[in-house]
Image (cartoon, rainbow, N blue to C red; front, top):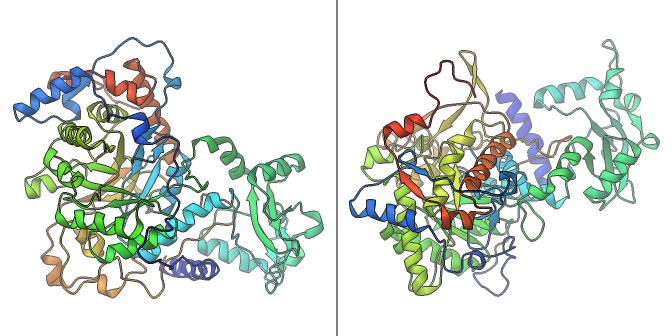
Length: 607
């Protein structure tokens, strides 16, 4: 496995040399800001007076608050109301920041190293959500991931760097490379190694006719250039789709006027993307949207600048206690450097006072969204370790009250992102009813195909690993986790600046734009990231690690969630989220009500 990874990194580095990340950082000025995120309607256009909640919900939650009683998802339920439409007609577009809205009810994948790297972020964008790249890696690798994701739509669906072979390569060499790199695709362009000109194409059809006793050179096996349908440079995905459909070909190499290979379209992925393009989360430049987590240290300003100059428009301040002076200082520093060219999500918080602390700033440096949740996550132990944290429904509503009070004085309202504790689409609906506009999901997405890590078979079932960023393993392995929980130790290098001598570089697979080589920070980890035995013993974990059941593709999981949310809004008679929030009526329920609402009195329960 180690040898395989080393070979992959070697090829990734070769491809990265042809497309380096943008390390150019302009001086701190607002004169030429980078173009902002996709804007159909701003938060202020839809919610000019902030999110309006129903009188029933406001009254219930305020009554509980006065008694110092906090509620979470299982303790509340929603009242049904008449509906005159089908749930499929419900629009679940919602805001994650003041300028950015998402089609899939504002679902973000968590900035965890077992949840969101480049494959997850790309899949989230293709399904109407957005991925938040974790920061448990060096800044250069994180920026490369951003660039890789954005280029997936910049090339209009084309594989811009297909893996190629030379005409004199032997068939055995190609077989070995495919096996070593575990490629699942079967078609490879054959090019002149000195000029890059396309000479032929080896597909599954050609490979099927190679005898087991033969080892020919690829020029003897390949389909010759005069037998291949090609497309000119700058062919769009819609044009490529038409060419491939008319000519009934599944591979379409793109060549320049000189015959140099510039990319390749693949029918299966192109067909899927053309049919699903309406679901994509895109910025105003037509690139896939992606967010990235950063820390609160001074060196993280440089990380933010590097991310922004490589196309990231949404930055998430990643802290277990977001209402602190370093967080306010970081917002000011980013605004001074990047102005309004980036959207800033600040958190995590769970109270009225913490929200007010982040919103009120004498310099006017405010966040564009607030992230709520201290300790509700399935892998988080902050509440048991620190004794702090408010159950999520009450926490969301308290932050909502602060946003409303601040907005009524200043006219500045921000969306709220509920982070943690969500176990079903019904919980997401309850988040919206309590005042949130979006949700961040971790454990619910950790078991999908697109999450980092391998599938583990245990006792006849398939699992994937998950660990909290405050777990001992995460904190011992990278300084990004230690910084999030204020556990940085002297002598360890911040992950914002630590760079490997062989940095992992995202690459593009040859036959499918959705298959990626996942950079592995542990392989590229600087020795300065490692802790001594004594330093490791001083770590105070605020999370655990474990297994989550394998769930299949992210698309399937999100379809189920979004369908459940649509049904939830329809039960209140609302065709959009704003209408739902204004009409949803929360009730409290006891343990008997919770039991009644779940499967009961049957054996061998199956989904």
